[in-house]
Image (cartoon, rainbow, N blue to C red; front, side):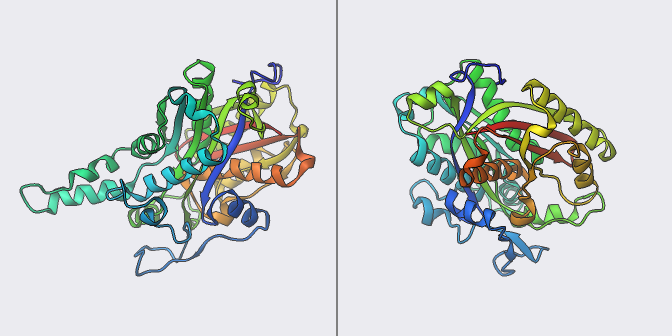
Length: 364
């Protein structure tokens, strides 16, 4: 894990990012919508999406074949398409020099998998006509690491290829896993982030889930990916240091009433590891939903200074992509406000299934 005492050239930095969100494809659409505090959720077309929700945060007009073409996309599901598009955006804008050594460039992608693909394939196995019952080309979509693998194949990333899953904390877990791989010498650069799809089956499952008495937020979708490498590698590649990763901490909690104390310990530890105090933080991007978990998160952050950046109320519950969107929001604010250079930003995640996490960054 990177620390403030490390030589700058060895510290792990974010030197590029890409996002596909309910604001549209690309960083510009995301940054403009977010900074203007424009809600990105909209009424759902019930004919296209027969779901028990009136609103959703959908990527506007997203169609896999229109964005990626017809070659290699016949059986591609929505989660994979979103991931492939976002990885491509990141490499196009920031990937100069990475193709020279593809075996040292990899991908760590967080995802919940595609509930729609799993349930559709299972249904076909029970109702399809003999002798084949199912379309074998769609079987890879039922495996959680399909978006990661397909993204690497399409964009020739031959380094480590890892899929992680951890609910709302997934984006931070992916960034931390990528940090460990880089520190272990397994790659020179890694794309790290998370992706989530909107689907009928996901919406129906979320509708009947136990949200601890809180009203369910509109569901969102999208992906955010970050280029992680050493400061020296960024300099050699002609890339600007957008943020330095100072550390991450994660804990589990057995019941929702103890989520706040678990997160408070994560925050205290990650600040102490960087030699920072709560009042040094300039930006905070919390991620818990309203209700009990939101109050627990507020309690954990009550001693932490800094402007709060609320992302979930604007784009909806993006589940696996939530923390990645929060991190992207921090970078969008930093890009628009030069005064934040060399200031600290804290991203926190609190998932109702029992995981909390905190990641500390130095901006610029």
